[in-house]
Image (cartoon, one colour):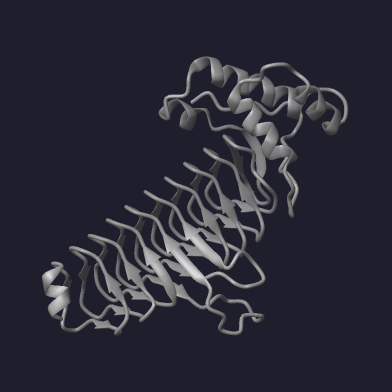
Length: 276
């Protein structure tokens, strides 16, 4: 405890911190928390109470873990045999009550990663080998299967369910109580069971300060890709052939053509992006 005192660490006497755990400057470990021997807590991490951090887990500077959350526990995968896989939580991320984040598997990437500045609301489940970017918001009771990828700034609505291997593009929005079985384009907006692509997340784009010209270019590309005549592959190829596309359009097209386990959620003919 002398090293803890020197570094300004505050460990409640009712907490259990295993020998070998590394605690940064100003870490607070509240009552009834459990910290495993291979855990690294960055500076000013706060474990409020009753949190369990286990496995080869690192939590970045300024992150907060609320009561009854578990981070780095073994995956719910019958193939997992105790291999030393990892969990990484980025700085300033907030993990609310009863969130579960499981470590990776050797049959996946070997790591479950949550980026910086994310908010995981109560009772969210992040399965093994998931990769969440920076600034992701996941609302209450949303769950994801293994190997899900979520891009920076995406928003996942409450009680949504993301199928394993699904990719959610940067800045996309998944509506509440949606069952997502395939990939969501960057800046797209999906809703429903099973989820359908209903348009672009224009409100989110405006809030991020995206230029009107870029939003207009995305809207044109969206209409041409999902509402135009002919086969989808032909429409996609035609858009790819256009010279000097807007960078956000290029990102959307690159996402649509990237390798995928689940395919792409398509919009119904005539679907349009929401105005407000």
